[in-house]
Amino acid sequence: MHYVKNKRAKDGPCNICTNTRSLSWDHVPPKGSIEISTVEMRVLYETLAGTNEDLRIRESQNGLKFRTICGECNEFLGRNYDQVINEFAVSVGRYLKSTLTFPNIIQHRTTPVKLMRGILGHILSAKIDFDNAQLDEQVRGFLFDENAIIPDDIHIFYWVYPYDCTIILRDIAMPAVRGDFSNSGYFQIFKYFPIAYIVTNLTTYEGLDELTIYRHLPINAEVDIPLRLARTEHYHWPEMVDNGNIVLAGQSASNAVFSVPRIT
Ligand SMILES: [Zn+2]
Image 1: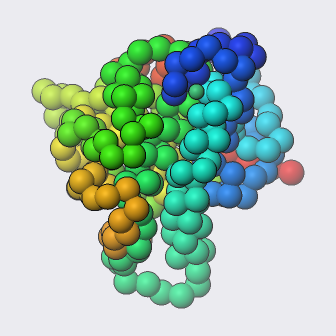
Image 2: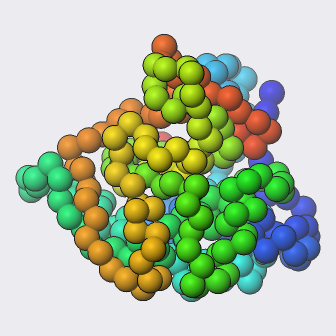
């Protein structure tokens, strides 16, 4: 039995700057990305494993949030990156909710370096256990330096996600190619309406578009990126375990949380 955990003690090491401070609540995704509602938080691992009976569910009245980063880091993400994350989410959401017909692939303008940095920052905060996993260490190393380029072995892919659940899964390994168990990669998964991201050491994954091809752009550079409106996957893709996929998970994955709006 796993209980939903989304906070640590009030004081502790910050998941981003690692200083021991008073910890603050970080909304993941950030406020302004989606309508904040009362959500039910569940432990993802038990849901995936199908052990739903006796599942402990906790409610949060204002969306999914984690008490894992200090006020300064929280404010840093909010000031520098959340606006770009939210603008991207709100405009992609408009396409998905629209009754108009769009081409299968459209181009949408965003600020990819800020978008990537913000996504990585919130992915770090969405882990209840403080640890020194490789990605966490790498992100800590460049996040506060505006001129630093996201390291070459971090690849971020994205696709549209027309579901109202939020799923954050940290530090798992899966086959690099579904159905082929000879090679695997490390993954971080962060999905919410209307867009999903995976962060991996792999240079390609299932034909998804890559954000990190823009890693060398200046932090404020805007560019049109492709959005494949016609490509949707199951809401538990790619972490679902099936004939073509297995998931190797550590402690942080067994504490992974997903949330769905409470049905009132
Ligand atoms: Zn901090």
